[in-house]
Image 1 (cartoon, rainbow, N blue to C red):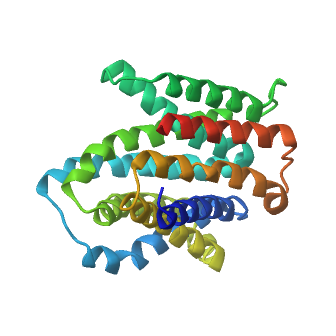
Image 2 (image 1 turned 90 degrees about the horizontal axis):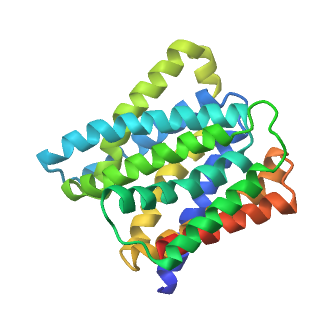
Length: 273
């Protein structure tokens, strides 16, 4: 992997973990998420204009992926309000590629290597360790992690085909505009304008810019290295987010949960191979 591509992929991983941590530590996660989405769409609108390329065949993909993005951010914000990031994040990020692989093997007759099978086993073992072996009490994030993973897998499978009909940044911006309007509009009605205004703080805005910037860095890395290697490096975000959840979110992340996150990241790296 070229050194510059490695730097871009690692930076994308750091940014992805960073914006999730920023949102998770906000007092009103839903309002902060709404502000983050609006900030990202507005700031990156000029970039989209400069990189504009759209084929008319993209619109059905945009319509569906926008709905999936709306579901994703709704689940993510709710999960971070009710559960621990150090449980939700590894499960969501780790299980999504497993779902994509299983779907590809079952429905699309895609070939599966022995390395990928080992990767699935590692992810499964890591997920069990992250979840913990004790009977859960209350909402422990497992359900949220599974639902978010399924949503990520769904729009990943869809976007793999839709991205052929638009430039990547244009595709992302177009898919995020309806999702942002739907999510921010709902939050505005349910929470009220005063609470949304209170969430307009540097952390929320930075989270939005980081979420879009992370994707831009992935695109830059993909221009210089294979998708498999970039995907493998990106999943270091699982370890980064889990490790930083202790000092930044005051979550109880012991060595066992951290080891589980590492196992998930290694498993995902093998899936990319």
